[in-house]
Image 1 (cartoon, rainbow, N blue to C red):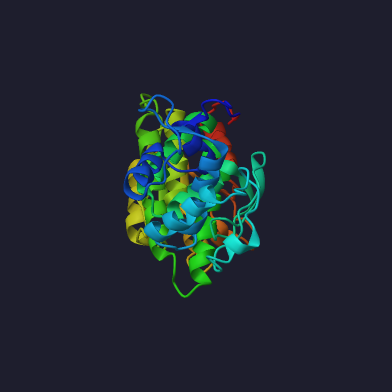
Image 2: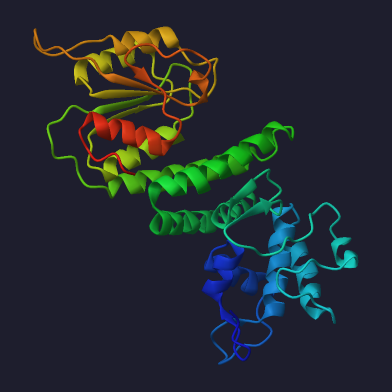
Length: 339
């Protein structure tokens, strides 16, 4: 909502556009992309025309236009006699200045199809749209702030399943179909998501029980660890003990880790069918430990799309989401399965 006399604050503008307040202030200092009027000479207050200018700046930079050039075009948005209201598509003449960039899309509630980031996002939350746009701009401060805000407002499970994972999936699809463009976007986004997940795990309650742990590992040749990091953070929230072994764990090493730690559950992540090793998963599920007469075997969770298409062996389950994996593991420990 705009105050007709004073406009809205920089923080409100940043949330609306999916950027950090630092980015908005930086654009003002470096490129003159600031409010036309400052109420008291110090604090920035943004009118609808000012926000329309910033939306044009975001649209152009997300499409690859250098910031200085994008700023010159965006300033013309505000100076135009018929500057559009916020969220209304620009006239054809202005769009022609950057023919490779998509037209601005209208504002809407939390979910809608999105193309402004140049990524195949589909029907996603507004927070996912903002995260994708910030990643495409390589705006690391904005990515970090958006992830922090998402976790604080929506919690881990919703943030992962509806904001982080869709953005990662869209970036991956984009570089696969564009001759390895956007690889730098995927690396930056992955790094910051990993950092956010580890912070979330570190802030969880410390596991104080002597219960056997959950072993988390990627199968041999599998490098995708972020889903396991999300699961580790979720288990930390529940104060359940974990042992994270990360990417591409050799079969012999993983077998030794299972035997030495005596876990209640083992989560094996496989992103592609080429890395899924069903024979090894069955071997882990049959691994027994403990004193004679009371030996137990771990429940094995086959996590990730690589395990699809095969009948489940005894002692294994195939969760379809982070939420489901947390529920399954919680039941192993006799915890409340609600997530």
